[in-house]
Picture 1 (spheres, rainbow, N blue to C red):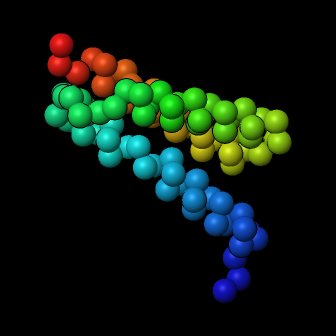
Picture 2: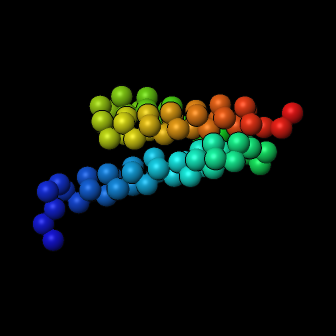
Length: 90
């Protein structure tokens, strides 16, 4: 099989795609159901910090794939945090 990019780049792109999209089902469920009682804010905050550090690392090593994928993940995670707080029961 002859890929237009090196195999390690191809695997990195696919891994980034799956990692980035992994949070979308949770965001869609929260928005659809308008409830988030079983969502751990602490887990989301820890993940937010980790993703932010990945973005920073990507900037340090000048790797656009790391920067873009993790920036999108930061945004999705931030939306999950916001809507989890909004839809969490009092």
